[in-house]
Length: 127
Image 1: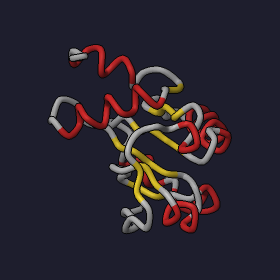
Image 2: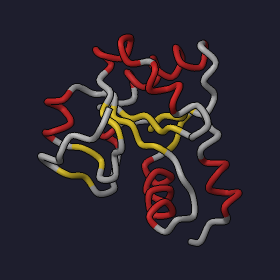
Image 3: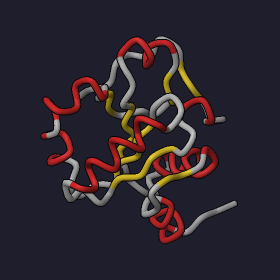
């Protein structure tokens, strides 16, 4: 199914998204139809074990307090968060929304509920 830019942008405005929506958005991003940041908030060992192909940033929740400046740099760009099951990202999203960040959505069931392409031993993305 082909989505309009408006439909793609609407997916990024919800508080959470499904595996199918993220797969759709990643494909649309590859085609240059939309732009967003995919951020993994798990720990490094979890990322190297398995990650979603297309992850842009790895920012472990254990380092979040020291690196909140990353969100200042991304304030105008939609950010999709994911973790293992959606629990950590739900907490991170709650904190960030209370701090005024509104362009944040999370993958509802984390990587465990993601049925798109994943990678093992992927190079660590930037922070």
